Image (cartoon, rainbow, N blue to C red; front, side):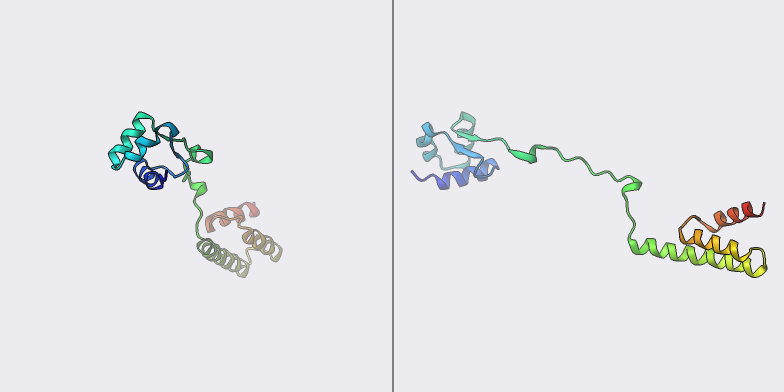
Amino acid sequence: MNLRKKKELAVRVLGAGKRRVNFVQSRLEEIKEAITKQDIKDLKKEGAIIVKEIRGRKKIVKKGKKKSPGKIKKKVNKRKQEYVIMTRRLRGYVAELKKKGELSAEEVKEIRKRIRNRKFRSKAHLKEYIGSLEK
């Protein structure tokens, strides 16, 4: 008995895969007579057609992705642009202070190392650090 078309109909109606839809062997004659979607639904209700549970990892509910500030990454190019702008601003300020004679060459060298390593958040932060050096 070829029930391939019936199985395809059942798969469409019940919204399950071919492997999950099973026909009960003792009721194959009834299933053979079913020609409408409603017939298939009734047979499922009566227990002539069985739909197996989903197996495997699909049952596991995925955790929702968190969007906290730490998870949001900026584009690399944007980060680099911000770094370049800040570095140039700070180095310019340090060069200005050196020209005025407020900083020695050794201090400038040390500060430039710190600028390169992103120790200063802003120009104000750098000024604060230089102020603490002079004390």
